[in-house]
Amino acid sequence: MNILIIGSGGREHALAWKISQSPLVDTVWSAPGSPGMNEIGPCFDLKANDIEGLCQLVSQLEPDLIVVGPEQPLADGLADRIRGMGFDVFGPSAAAARIEASKGFSKDLMAKYGVPTAAYQRVTNFEAASKFLDTLEAPYVLKADGLAAGKGVVIAKTRQDADIAAKSMLAGQFGDASAELVIEEFMTGEEASVFVLTDGTNAVLLPAAQDHKRAYEGDKGPNTGGMGAYAPAPVMTDELTQQILETIIEPTLAGMRAEGCPFQGVLYVGLMMTDEGPKVVEYNCRFGDPECQVLMMGLEGDIVPIILASSTGGYSATDFARLAPGGGFQPAATVVMATKGYPDDYPKGSTLNGVTTANRLEGVKVFHAGTDIDADGGLMAVGGRVLNVTAKGQTLDQAFQRAYSGVNAINWPEGFYRRDIGWRVRTDFEMPADVETDEPGEA
Ligand code: AMP
Ligand code: GLY
Image 1 (cartoon, rainbow, N blue to C red):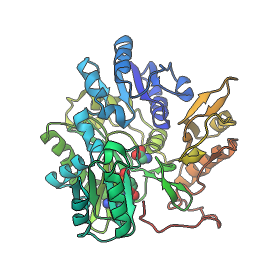
Image 2 (cartoon, rainbow, N blue to C red; image 1 turned 45 degrees about the vertical axis):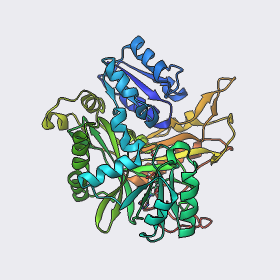
Image 3 (cartoon, protein in one colour; image 1 turned 180 degrees about the vertical axis):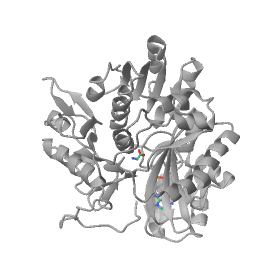
């Protein structure tokens, strides 16, 4: 079969890489793809949010399956359009993508169907915001309702900061996305993300992954899309997994069905392990990036049958579970290399050396997140997050040793990375003396 992947990041490169290993798959096409994805199969120069262009490409290529990586085209209805043309697609409808694209929708869903989460209120003016903030204690959590490229959450330490944030968000700090806010209670605990492959009814859970959102070591600095990740996250025991399935995943999927928008694809559930048990921080309607990279690296069996079954539906619970990738999961880690300046402005066009050398190391694979080919045919950086140096090992320690050997093989003076990815779980790790650590639980 032939599969078309939509997107160009490290997440999509990892998906293309894993999917191409399936004995069921002949060709993996990508749009727009990347130099890394171009090594796997042909790329088509169309932006991931060019809905019309992508629909035309689908009718030309007639893929057996289309896998949509990022959230924006899903929120814009790409999966609905492609399904309407009679093709199978891995990704939710626009109505189901509201689980990510509207925080208000997702909080109302949780409230209605009894999914544990932080107490909240939806507000559209400062008076209402202020009134609800009066009922909370510091720190305060304010979220833009709409998609804001992972930047729409503000954690304010004082009431004064919360007021300032509420005013500026409502005044359009995140454009239309923050015309409405969700204000919620602050939760404390360890965070982890679970990824659920689902046809809307049946669900298969992948191992839990942990991301590092802050730009700098010691979990300092501004929030980013993610500077590194690992899986499995030891915080997730079998008992917790079962509890999460029963108290969170099942009611969420049932709620979506009852609302008339069953969720098909991969549901990303961000969780906080609070003293009162696991609670939902947020949902996303797609794989995490860079969490996807470690999941694809660690999964030993074939991922294509379950992706296909999620896309088509119609399986019994037993048949669906049987299609889950067999062979277990090897511990995996990824370190993001980003252009200096990210997540603010950064230059483009610097030369990347050593990627081929890194790829030759045992257990190491470098996924491209923001690269292009320069005039001389060399590899250059064109994004904020540029490379995801990913590795697997017998243990998480080994996976990290290998990933950092890959990082060391790469020569890119204009880039930076965090040395402390996985600090909570690496038994051989000591925080470098020059790194100040932050209080846990801060975003
Ligand atoms: P989100 O984009 O909703 O995942 O939020 C980004 C980050 O903000 C999360 O990963 C958490 O670290 C933090 N966060 C969001 N909501 C809360 C909350 N209610 N309590 C504590 N931290 C939160
Ligand atoms: N790594 C966080 C995200 O993909 O939203």
